Image (cartoon, rainbow, N blue to C red; front, side, top):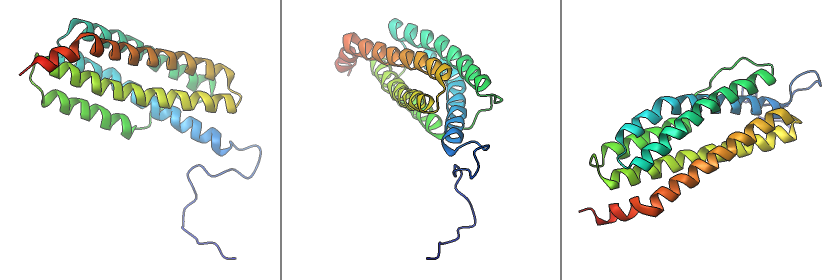
Length: 184
């Protein structure tokens, strides 16, 4: 049976010798680089959300998460070091899209309103859910690859992302959503 020639090999093709990195390891490293870009991008994007927010508890939550995000960048750099790799970011199209959406929400809502704050929370939770999925998947891969030290770092960040998501949900649920519902 003849196979179709495409002229290119799969990006994460399995290697033919044991000395080469397996495809799963390459996918893992590529995904870490993607997440590294995403976290660095958030360090630049979160101050825009802070300045657009009105509710003090929302501002505090985003400021707090900005500091955590800076630590997430450092942790990813530690992971690169543990992997024996240089910390190189690979553009994350998903995070770029999520932050563009957040900027669009800010632009389409009135400054100083609870409605804008609700929009910021919704956009922020989308970001958190993307990060939770990414860190969870990478944690599972690290376990599979036998990278216990890396898995522990990923698990720590995953826990913080889940807490940030819960905090945003609590802020919306406890007051901001109701204030927005009363706005004209």
